Image (cartoon, rainbow over all chains, first blue to last red; front, side, top):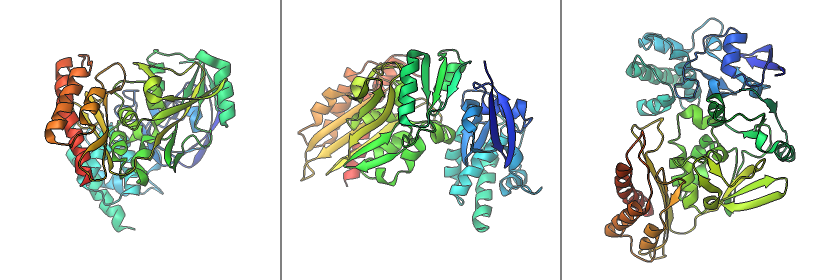
Length: 159
Length: 286
């Protein structure tokens, strides 16, 4: 199968990739670009560990073809902290002890980031609804929800 | 997965490519079903035609009727301010689909083409008497959504044909819609049973002049409970009339038993959910 030359914009940086059209964004991020912060698990868009932002919206990168991302902006967990400073959501996860094994956390952070940019000041019920597409098998949901609500308040106050 | 990838930039080019590849090609919309089916080896198209650069397919147009382009996402339906009144049922159907990552990319056209009897938005569209438009090598044709849905996973779409839009009339007068879903948990769940209802009352608000009840996951395709509709039309919307409609729908549906629920349980749900959806419509008239 012939390969396609692609220019991808990941975390604000341009990357040239040569890949087969059937490969997913998740696969290219992890294998070709070494960006292993985006996790791989169910490969069926159920668990949310592969969540990245595509043009600002949360998507499961396991069901997005890399070729579909030409000319679009991809944000992964590696690009969330800016200039060496943690994003308020990342800091809130630390402050609330919301991280156990950590595997679901990159996806949680990116889902929360897209959500809070539209709805800072969201209630816990809204946050829990938003997190439905991100599974945590340590079952640390309460602390995760607490962290996202607190981060939302911090974001809202900072505006 | 191994295929040639195409990215048409106009509707004409997409239709042309669809016609050229016929059954060897598949149109790719949100990918929430197709990519997963391809990875499981259930389908193996030689050509994948991504639609995301075709302009206009993601438009919602309101002009006496509503036209949803095939690429309108569940997220776009959820957020469309014009759907918050009489079309509230459409929003209720869209907002329970998957998680937000799925609703961000999953499309109304893909939901119809996937032809799952458990689809959530499809019953609402059926209750709105929606029609669909397909474009192929032989031109454009319009079908009712009901005749388009043939069996699980199969529609009346011809090989290479592209579903471009869904249309329905904007409900007028004293009309309300509602959608209810039963699953084993509240989120990220395929419906065990889902119900969409549309009711129109006469000018005095006393009698029901038009009723639509459409059900998901109780038959090989999304199913209209016509007997139940007939029981309501021309009568006052009393609790007893609504319960009667529920019993008629439960008697007429053809559910299967599977990993999610037994057929018997599905019938019980229908008997309960139909009057509940009707009551939700009625409450919206107040």
